[in-house]
Image (cartoon, rainbow, N blue to C red; front, side):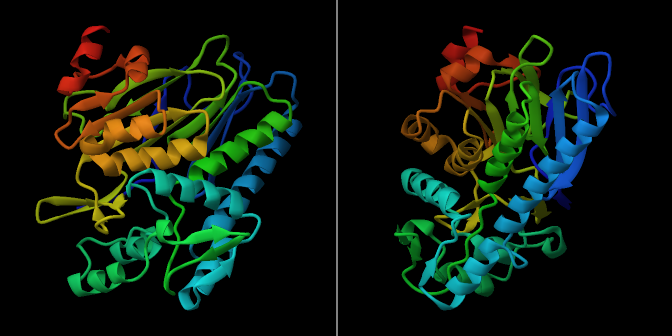
Length: 357
């Protein structure tokens, strides 16, 4: 069995999911395809003409497409060219368009105890999770995987100084799939803010950020249940988002195949080069969408053993992990805001918070 699903499914819980234009509630919604997923723009702009809104959507689409080209490991974009140089060399100048996010990714990698690292590009490729065309229905040959693991695959084992990235040896391949979508969502929302939009949501396949509010009340979203019972809702928990907040989820149900009774998914553990085994999903709410994206991955890979340490390291107020057994671990801040939409088994350390709900 294999599935390729773009993004962790997060559904809006307010009104109509897709609006075709300006409606009586003053909301406008359009969908575009970019960054390998369906991006939904929802905004309130009753004073804008249809022509102005169409132009704004086009501007957002152009910004997202620039991010897609820039951060794709394939093609001729900036990251693809950087990787081509790293294939043969140990030192490469980092283009100005890549440098800020590369710095942020490197900092997260160094502070996350090995649970997040964009240096996994070659291993992602070997596992067949880099795009739908190369998707597999069985694990890669062990000999091929062993060779890939011997090649450089840690951004933490590089130095970044004066705009130049120095690797220990040639062969490093970077993949920013666990942070670039967050940066793109933030950039898209910046386009809307610069155009004077005060109330909006940018939803990229379920990973999203909001500004303002939804008709005088907070934006309300629901996070998908990673293993919904057959006769139960597919939603796990509802959350109200405040101005500027982003919510990102990593789950083993997004891109995976099953082989001989085991699920193999795209969230690789940098320490082993194999799919992480300690969680079903993880969710982070943060005002920095790129950081929310990266830390959702880190929490998933770290699992129960590193949940508390990562929460403390990054001062995460709103975070949740569904462990491999389906039990929920969550910060007190997340528990305070959670509206549980399904029967939930809380981990022992969450019982006190759960009882307080």
